[in-house]
Structures are given as C-alpha cells and as structure tokens.
Length: 394
Image (tube, rainbow, N blue to C red; front, side, top):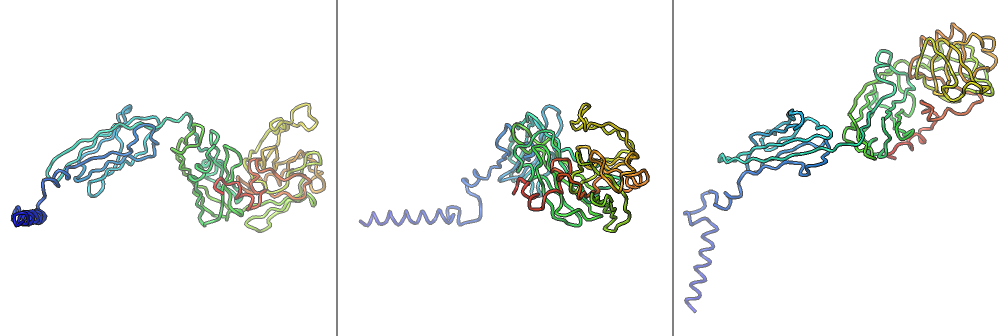
C-alpha cells in the first residue's frame, strides 16, 4: 500500500512540474515545441469560390502568424496587374481595382513569419460572363442640359437597354441626392424605364446628383449591369405655363410670379389636349409635325403633316407648344388644333426663348383625358401616394 501511494504522489508532482515549466528550471516565457509548430505563417486567398465570381467581389489575401511580403494579381489575358492595398500591419491585402466580366486572374501571394520562414500561396479566379449587359441610359441626356439646366418639373429617368426582372435589386443601387434636400421616389413605368421625381416640383437652384451602381448587379434572365454611372443636374429658375381651355389664355409664371399672358388655341373636340402637368422634353426652331409618327397616318381623317416653328414638345403623342399662323383668328376664343397649344409668332418666339427642358405646362379645362403616366413625362398625373406605390421597394 505504501508503494502505491508513493507512485501516486510522484505522478502528481510530475504533472505539476510540467505545467509550471520546471523542467527548464521554471517558466521563462519561452515557446514550447508544440506552440512553435502552430506559429507557422499561413496565407489564405478569398474568395474561396474560384469560378463565376462576381467582378465586384474584392480579392482579399490574409496572413496568419506572420505578414505578407508580396501579392500579385494578374489578368491572364491582358497581362495587366490588379491594384490593391496592404493593411498597416501587413497582414491583409485587398484589391482596389474592379474586376472585369468573363476574365481570369492569377493570384500569387508570399508571407513570412518573425523567424524568416516563408510560404507561397496561389489561386486562379474566374469571373462570371453575363449573357447580356444592360447600360443605364439617362433622360434627359446630361450633356444636352449642361448649359441650360433643367426645369422644376423634370423627372430623372434611367432607361435600361434590357428588361429588368429583379427590379428591387436594381432600384437599391439607384440613388438621388438633392441639395437642398427634397423628398422623392422611384416609379417603374415598365420593365426598362424607371423614373424619379420629388413629391412636389424641384426647388429652383437645386443640385441633383444621380448615381447608378449597377455594375455586377443581377438584372435577371442572364442580364447584368454594364457599368456604374454618376451624373449631376442643376435646376434653373421656375418656369410654369398655365393653359386654360375655358379662357383660351395661358399665363406664364416665372418663379411664382405672373410675367405674361397670351391667347391660345388648344385641341379641338375630336383631338383634345391632354389634361394635367406636361413637361417640356425637346425644342426645335423648325419642326415637321407628322401625325403618322404616333400612328395616325395618311388616309385617316385626323392625319396631318406640316412645317411648324418655335416648337417645344410637351408629350410623346404629338403635343407641342408652337407657332401656328393659321389659327391666330381662333387663338383666345376657340380650340381648333390637333392637340397642340397654338400661339402667334411673337408669343411663340418669346415662349421658345424662355422655356427649356423640364419646364412645365399645366393644362386645365381642355376636354381631354389626363396625360398618361407612360407618355414620356406623365409623372405628375399621379398623387404622391400613388407614385410611391410604383417603387419596387414598397
């Protein structure tokens, strides 16, 4: 029995001695053989998935138990290097260049530990190759209004080159910032066109910054966003025309003040001018008006083709504000046009010189139907509650 107890005591003593490091004369803070094996530098490369990688996914290289000494990422087809940055502690490298669609990249990374031991890690990453790429075309084209700015009624429009199935995913990547801030929302007119407008007309002098971060976004049906885009619009003074079919007069308001009133003739009973707020989308000093452009062609009693002057388009179905010398006798007393607002020569030229893209023509008492939401800029036909329901995020 005594022998057995002695063995037990010695065993316990040995265990205590090992935990305290007494085999080396006490715990000196050194590293044991087992911990040395665990301290070997390791290098990892992300993403771990190496095929069909979304090109917006950054390549990240990390070193554990050491630091990175060199990382090279190369486009194998072009031979170009992908730029990236090393963290301050040299343990993480992250790519800063956006990768391309349908491309292959080789990753070659080296790491080292404090003792100078090195390791190399390699990987090959291939990005997805979309069947189609959708471009984010903008209306109005920013370059077309760079010098004039836009009017207070101007909606911001993205027109994509392919249909959007995943509308919510795309809309999340669209932003509009206005200075001063104004509440606004998107509305999907159809699968290719999404419009943004504020709750009320833009404030004069507003700066509008529009961004579409759609590169790498899955539109659905094999379509991905082709490129990101950021554009800036500036809102000029407020110009609003109020055309009244009862009085046959049109008041012109500049920044809320009436500055001119002119006699008009709007659409006759068979072709009444649409009701509601119209937005100027184009202006031409000389313009050939042909009803066949919207389906009313020769042989139809409502067909027409004429050369007009000082013409500003206010809808896509042939409604303009323009000079018409043939209707001067009716201007101010009756409606005789095919839907346009007719003016005499002096008033038409004055209107042309003062109104630009995005300015507003509000039509009342015309006998026509409300301007449809799909008629280019029928955006203001909807109440704010109705408009917000057109967002894919609501």
